[in-house]
Length: 415
Ligand SMILES: Cc1cc2nc3c(=O)[nH]c(=O)nc-3n(C[C@H](O)[C@H](O)[C@H](O)COP(=O)(O)OP(=O)(O)OC[C@H]3O[C@@H](n4cnc5c(N)ncnc54)[C@H](O)[C@@H]3O)c2cc1C
Image (cartoon, rainbow, N blue to C red):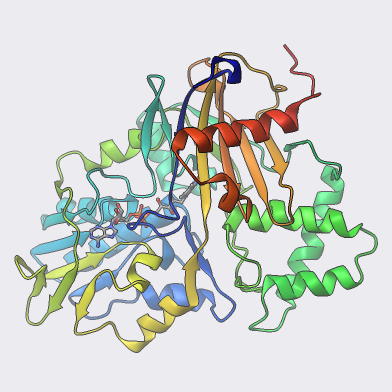
């Protein structure tokens, strides 16, 4: 690493390529509705239920939604009188399911494909301090079961105002008042769209008569709100249902990362790491990978992993569940953690940088409060990723750092 870059440490996510994720979080495509989420989470039989973040009708794509669905599925299996239950996946939903089972006196065996727990929360040490390459924030903080757990565990959390980014390096700037007006207009256009319209359809229509806003202001707003929030092509996302709630409703990031919660949740559970599940047979019992028998199974793997057929179900999943999988999908948002020898950016907390092309966007958290060492956490989405997220982690980190450095050049660092 070149000393002149000022970069002293880094970590890079690869959610798009990761066979156990194949994307970042679940989304509703143009032919889908929230009923697909409910359909996917409806028990297949008394012995099989799917329960990950994607099955939450209103809190999908978030850790507390995953936790709630897992806990509900665990209570469901115990309520049916099952005594031994397999759980597939040791992410937030799987951990919650296993805990709910064990709390009711049911034996739970958790199969996890990776050699670590946490799923799309992924703790890493960078320069001796813990960060997360997946989820960072407790969203909807006031009504978030994991926020209450974080409080009980005495964790330090720091608020982020997503409505007040410092936009760096962009000729197009939006005031807070503009943003509020744009959001109202966007929401009402999306709500009024035909049932199978995409967000791109709505945007194209809006740009035909953009007044009182300049077209670039609208495009940048959509990039910041929807592309950054989904990482999916606008032409795939459902206009009515593809822009779901979550961000901007009271977000606080966990200093030290989510593993402070997942380690707590996993304590005492029977978790078999490096045990991918590839076959689930259901007859009078459930057989996992042709070996052990269980009374029931709770499957918490991400939607694209299920849709790819990574797990063979015998009998196959019913048509309603397969349709739900067709209607749902996931986008790609990647994260980079960058540590520097000095802070060269203005003190603000949260930043946005738009890319060279439309629908390329990144947002940045100043994570220096973690331990006082200058640190940025960057999230990238859109076509930018195809160019930036190639090569080694070091190349990605340098490329991402260069993006932020160039955008912040000329801004007073405030120190
Ligand atoms: C970059 C990024 C940033 C995010 N930021 C936030 C945030 O700030 N706040 C927030 O609330 N949410 C955030 N999220 C979303 C959040 O991380 C997820 O919604 C949540 O963690 C999903 O939990 P889950 O248990 O449903 O799925 P997962 O965490 O994906 O757990 C599923 C588990 O199943 C395992 N698995 C997969 N296939 C198999 C198999 N065949 N056999 C056995 N095991 C298998 C996986 O390895 C994984 O451990 C973010 C996600 C990403 C990627």
